[in-house]
Length: 211
Image (cartoon, rainbow, N blue to C red):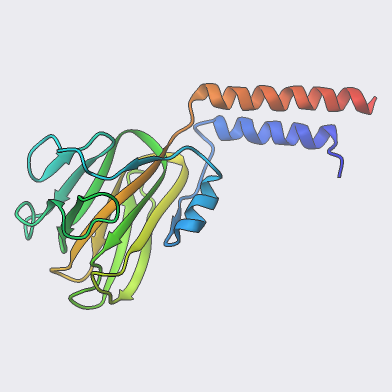
């Protein structure tokens, strides 16, 4: 099907709106890694396996791409930090236990976050949720019972960008282990500018052909 100049102009307007801070996006949550990867459409991902010795002191640890913080006083800081118990990539992951919460914070905004998780629901059924720094929330699992051998995946995609993800569970004393974090950075303004320029050239060429 041949696109008309009007369609190209509409695409240009949409791209311009997406580049505007006022443009509204909705966060989407994922429990399927395949669906998560399809949603980001090939955007470059940075993977953190928590192998590097972290900086900082309990209950907050800084890795090359993320700072991990245990929030609360029931299990933090004695039962949280790095662990070799249930990794999914390399030899080390990070862990905490409910009813405390666990936050992954980034130095710069990201548009996508995904991570492996083990240990959910091993002490009884639980509801597991996540909250972004921009206020978006999602419930990933409801009344879930599991075991340490099952690897789960949880993720968020939000084109508006966010700087942290905080996880919580409703079942107390549930030890949760995380590894193989994947993040996608907010596109540089130059990349958006190139997209707009390309769309503009295409629209002009289509207009000339229609004359």
